[in-house]
Length: 389
Image (cartoon, rainbow, N blue to C red):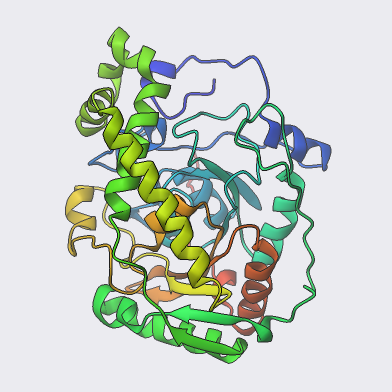
């Protein structure tokens, strides 16, 4: 069954294979299995790591900690060495967060570069599918296999992608934007040494690093409105039939119901802000080629801790460095590469590189050089050995 991590779909068998799986099969890859995820990709919001048909996604580095969401199993399986790579989806953080928490490399592609046909729809204007792997180079090869236009996906950009390991422009020629406040003010104190060292490595690779800051826009409110409205439309039948009450998380249930009540003007205002965000990023990328920021401001929280408590230690804000880069980057449809860069308290820490639309080769060039100079992506968790049965 293809359950979408949710009890109402526990017996669901779909009648067609997703485009990305057909493409991988055509490239010689075999489907090893289906991995756990937060129910319905967390579209209504969720308060607990246990908001999944299979229970909380456990982190291979410490199984009392969360693997992140919503693509929990995608990151955990790669971190544990169960598979060489996996696929996940992101609407607002669902690739970046589990990759950062589990210490694996991952690539969120430009919106429209990879077909979503045959995959669960949460937000038609935001959903993206991308790879988790051990290295940036592996992510490049996987993206080449799954990218390309698709008439079955109305959001397809109609573009292919060819990974060029030795990119035409050396990594050392790129200019990066960076905000020191992201580390010194926003990140948890335990993460700061690893993040400082990682930024120093990036600084040694690139031609220039200059201070930048996102404009003061309501990124979080805008993307939440879009996800709520489109997610509730996607699952309208589930909501109106009462099947939504079978979900595990009360916040998810309430959020999906509330999404049907969002007024048209509020959705349109969010889309107007989205366009403004795209314009502001276009201006920013006239000055720099890559944005460098912490992937997450804390390490993985305990699975037993309510997620609003774990993520609410610092209130989200629009301005102030690049702290809102996950929401802002997803609103603009930008690609992002997640790179493991150290540990804090035994748990992985990661950087993210964000680029202009369709600049995946540039991000990968910097990522490959970063991983040539570090070995964080080669670290493996010590897993318990099963005893005799």
